Image (cartoon, rainbow, N blue to C red; front, side):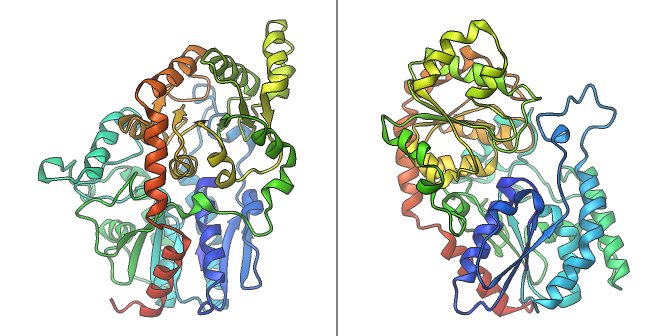
Length: 462
């Protein structure tokens, strides 16, 4: 039983894992819960049962669209725990029983339910981290914007082989564990479910050990590229890095050339273009202005071909035209032959290897796909782990951070200067070499599926 939630970069690893498991003769059935927002990513196989659940974010509340100074109450991830996970947990348990599940795989956000399921059914539990989210004395906390440069340097030290001098702190105490306020809400909701099902009350340490794979029968899979975010030296022996296998995921029946024939023709018609995609991040309903910034900055840097993926930011040549600004006339004339705006859902696994540069928000799924493809990044973060990822690429000389927080925070000049900096440090060559090295490691979906089936067969007596 796979329980996904969150945004695209959170959901795609579960869809890819379900697809891989369904191909194994030893697996009879796979149940995967996916929010209705991302059903287009749902895997298709006679062995797979997709269970949609009601979790949709109103457009006005999407990350990047909320003016935190103007709203009385900004989005609260804890509301998700209370209003969506706990309320739907009984249905999740019933589904797991129906499938006679032998293992439950869960994202962090649904641990409050999956913990209950594993204990009621007495089956192994795997926490799937699409980000490097372990909590150890060596491992930095990746969700703080102000600390992102220092956090990226700490991760860079882990890449190079951490020593005792590189310990970044004790994250295992109740007061020092980051996001302890959010985790308290998680723990409260977890204990509500546990009490309803006759289980003992969990402690804070129970939650931390579940998160890190330190409880009997619990494990952690970190679905990130090992060359980018390797495991810390003091990780649990039941923590495994399986690679960013979602970076190569293609939904069943997806034929990119047939689905995007005009885009394929544009890509084949000249040198590799830059691609701008801000995924599930909004632009404060200013997609046209962001488009202008991107295109003017790239054009000034001598980038002659650009692909725009609208996403939730709603960038695109049509968004620029809608501004109806006479000052954009020359840019629009240039864009007619040099810029392509995509339609539909384009898989990064197909698109990024055909591009020379990625402009993005720094989300885990996008960064993993760019790293796997061997393409450098110009990043403008919005929230969460995005500042960390962009600062980490900068520390590795394969990325440049353009703005602070929000897609309104970068300028045309920052784009132009960012391209030049990538050229100056040799980022295009470094990224290509790292991508080749990463792909050669064979961290694909097969590795993750073998691990899941082994854990399921071994049960909880470990």
